[in-house]
Image (cartoon, rainbow, N blue to C red; front, side):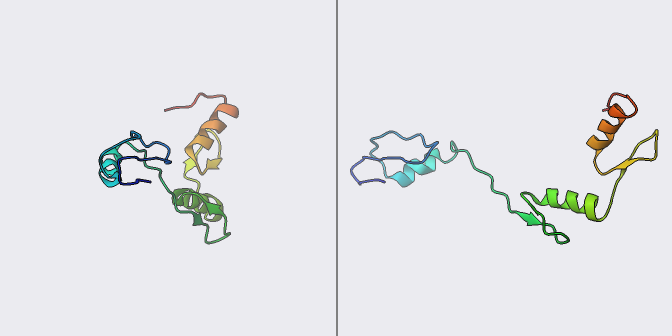
Length: 103
């Protein structure tokens, strides 16, 4: 809060303000805004089939494809197994076929 006499008390973490400033807080805030870290906010997304809630929309889409639509685009070249994620195929190759992951 600013008392109009140059004294400014800051309660916001991350604000870099001196205790005594001759300028109104709006001017100081405009200068310090680029310094402050912008906190990202994510809109939750619920699966339309089962109602499971995810923090990010892409997680919900990934869940929908793998769980409800059974889309498994990553196929093992050595056996008939398929996987919804590349990382799952890589783990399979390493565990089952004892092959290092390819980049």
